[in-house]
Image (cartoon, rainbow, N blue to C red; front, top):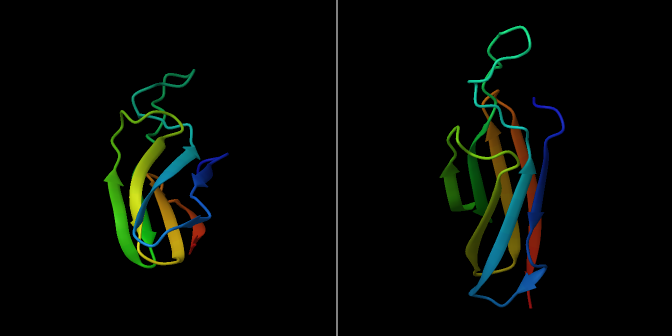
Length: 109
């Protein structure tokens, strides 16, 4: 597991049924392409967030494959329609097998 990884998510606390909302995510992650060398000349192993998913009440909203050119601390912003009150589940997958998760509830109002 990479050190200092911290997912952050911004979801409105409530929305109208059927409303499209904007969701913002950021995960603090150093990201290493696997092409750089350390001070001793050894390759630093690749360590990137390679996939991001978001589900709402168990239904997939977005599924993104990230490639080695992704920046440090990847930021994603996307729209989602909220049909009912529920919970968004955000998941980031790391090359080393680590999985980082965050959840946010949203009410209908």
